[in-house]
Image 1 (cartoon, rainbow, N blue to C red):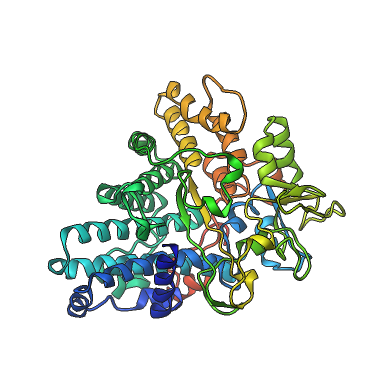
Image 2 (cartoon, rainbow, N blue to C red):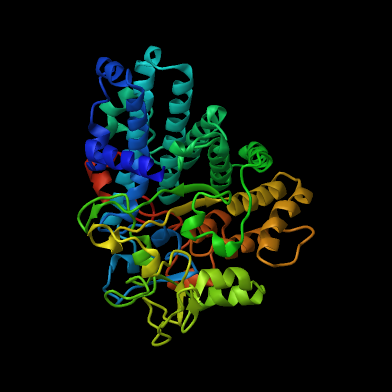
Length: 510
């Protein structure tokens, strides 16, 4: 059934195109009478929603390769750029070294991607309202809730990256879109949290949906993202509500922890450990300049090897550093260390007998080659499914694990402490630790929760954003060039500032 979802996504992409953000935001909302006819067929409602999911795939497919790990890992104290040489996708060096440039296309691409998602979610909401009498109550509630979740999700990605952004929620907003200034960061989070709160009301639990809805919004997903966004907002007024949502997710019996080493295996995708995964699957035809339903992630992060290598022809980006290795060892955390890091000469995928050859010298500023590579999204060639036509390297089929249950449990522990119920933090916190083979802690502190997050979620694109929201700016970041008060948020794309004649204002990092 993944094929149904992904085929519909591909169809939505072809039908709606990948127009730039400026064109999306300036386009007139759908005419109401046309919309009523369009929505008289229930399948068309679904197509509009799927179009709003589609931009989630773009960061894994475009030529700029602006994957989540580029910002969440390479800017953190866990990883280095990697690749073949300093000039290999050199724009990634600027992320690691905090030499950010607002004219770099990758910031514009992130902005475009998520405002495209906002546009599509809004159009679904406008269309539903215009044709409400044509849609059953059940279909309306489902579509409305998904659209609210999707709008909130895309805005959450934007506020994480850029801080406050223009808030667009009405048809009139699109008429004067260039005149809408950035909202404050607090206003943006208020908007996002309202979307997630509203979405969770009528969304169903994960196991209540049939296979057709695989990968789409659920009640647990909306509640989990409410908790995450509340913590990212640093607005304590939301913490009690967020904590209650985490308890609802846990008590729903929809999720559980599985063995750590099984999380990234293909056969376990969308399992009970998973709250949200971006869905990928190889398409029949794909190449470097053709969008598909496949992903570049395996190629980008797998061990760098030559043409037709059994190791998957990886490019070797996003290299973990020795400090991360030492943190795992100091904690006695062998289970997660061995599933996160690959060492020179190590046998991985023992059923295939693959032994890694990873360079241990020299160590350069851009690659930090210390005999390490990351394992979570590594797939040997034998595990890949080459497309019938095209290049299998850019047509991977590993889902991206956006939100795992362990992440939610650690958020629950953090919130328990922050709402004055520290005694309730131990249960979710220790569930994650014992799965990793570590001893329990009777009364975990915030610092211990943050340390646990670093090890549990290492190399998954979260670390830098965790460092910023918790104020854990380490010496390693300062040595790389991080300046407090400047580098907490990425630059607003210069193209957007220019397009609005300065109505959209820059960040300190511009």
